[in-house]
Image (cartoon, rainbow, N blue to C red):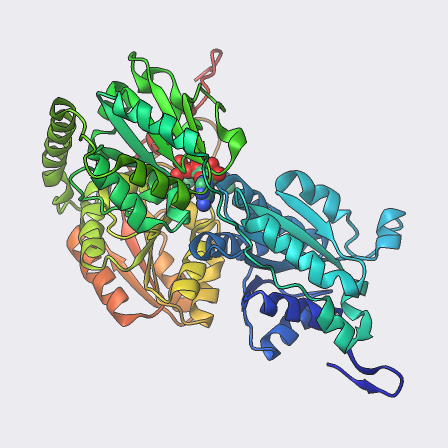
Amino acid sequence: MAEETEETGALTDGFHLVIDALKLNDINTIYNVPGIPITDLGRYMQAAGMRVLSFRHEQNAGYAASIAGYLTQKPGICLTVSAPGFLNGLTALAHATTNCFPMILISGSSEREIVDLQQGDYEEMDQLAIAKPLCKAAYRVLHAEDIGIGIARAIRAAVSGRPGGVYLDLPAKLLGQVMDEAAGEKSLVKVIDAAPRQLPAPDSIARALDVLKGAERPLIILGKGAAYAQADDAIRALVETSGIPYLPMSMAKGLLPDTHPQSASAARSLVLKESDVVMLIGARLNWLLSHGKGKAWGTDPKKFIHIDIEPREMDSNVEIVAPVVGDIGSCVDALLSGMGKDWNAPPTVWTSAVKEKVDSNVTRMAPRLQNNNVPMDYHGALGALRTIIKERPDAILVNEGANTLDFARSIIDMYQPRKRLDVGTWGVMGVGMGTAIAAAVETGKPVLAIEGDSAFGFSGMEVETICRYNLPICVVVFNNGGIYRGTDENSAGDDVATTVFVKDARYDKMMEAFGGVGFYATSPDELAQAVNAAMDSGKPTLVNAVIDAEAGTESGRIGNLNPQSVVAKK
Ligand code: ADP
Ligand code: TZD
Ligand code: MG
């Protein structure tokens, strides 16, 4: 929108400086919901050749941006309006920070002078202060000439060190500020080496190898940080050279194929309990690993080696005898070269004990996955989808729910890195459609989203977005008529139980409402047929999979986290 003026030559403004700064840093995709003061920003972005995907709710745009960051190692951008739009985006910003995904939430905001005097502006809110505790860094830009540096700082904060969410506040007035075009161009900053490698100290590598050498029952745990790092070949080489059994955390599944002979997934309880040395690579000892102590970890004393880019993660829950601080690629390379060619594999008593347990558990599970029961149980339905992922290893699996999540995680083998995207560290319901959309947009691959009916409801309106952009996404709703089960009863009053939904709901019709294709499946065979047809079509599709309302358990696999009332009357 540069205009010629006699005194100053060509002009630019805040809108265009934001766009130029993002483009200069190779950021070309924006996840947004338009409105005051950023409607025109979205329009100008499109006009400048950026891909601007509009959502029906900012939370879903935010989840899309966060997973885009995870998949690409560039900050995913979510663009929102002020106060309510900003607040809708905040859950996703906090989710990104919690999961170590690089994301920038850019929100328009109201006039500073009025907000700070609390004089009641349109959508008045001190957004910067509210965002701060939920992200790695929060910045506000007040002058057009600072847009370049502001965006550079936001990018670097999001991706360097431990990645996370960043908030960038752009007051309405800033966007309209005008400055000389040449001076504007000069003010832009191209971020050089946004996430610099962080080499581990050689003595930390030597210490880790010493501990590993002394191990009789070693275990490697791979977390989503390892998947994020995109050091896939090195990680595979480390696992294979070491000969150590490994356990992938949920989103690290597929970093090595789940069918790999060293995978200990199907012997999780055994390896956690019995191992003596555990090497964590990009996985925190948080609740998902029972904080590294207690019953799940057995009675044998453990030694932990921890590889992470964040020094403060060391000793977070238990003592770490060999902290290795650095980026995973560099750390794994250093460990590999330290191991050399004649590294001794762990004792076979250990590796065969793990292998035996894996084989017996896999054999025990196999017939259950082949059942063709009607109504479907989780094993029958997921057995069918497991085959589909095996035949389409390139597809991205999105997964949320309780039983739908926990069973799918253990039943569906993944074959390639970063193909399993799910609820992450918090176990958030509602990430589904935003995640599916970003996965399709960022990778161009087909997406299979396996959704509990409750989980789907949190972002279900985005099926319109999926249809609008004609994305190759097949949503399968595991319809058991409720949260965990569809059979709860309210013992008093006429309302249905708190966990129950409308019976026999037809989620497939929601997809049809916007021009996509709906399917209805009542048996594993029908489900397999529908999903294959859906994925072959490459069109927006939704399969309503009727699941036995009695099949699920309370809270899936984490029912133990529910507090119990000691005075419960019922
Ligand atoms: P999971 O839930 O799969 O166990 P977490 O989210 O708990 O994984 O842990 C991911 C860890 O990976 C975080 O502690 C984060 O600091 C770390 N991390 C992320 N990227 C890198 C990287 N490039 N190098 C080293 N560590 C990383
Ligand atoms: N709200 C948010 C944002 N996240 C949550 N995790 C929850 C609420 C609580 N919750 C769970 O932890 S799982 C779940 C809820 C509401 C839904 C489970 O029902 P589902 O799956 O239909 O998705 P299953 O297969 O019926 O168990
Ligand atoms: Mg359900």
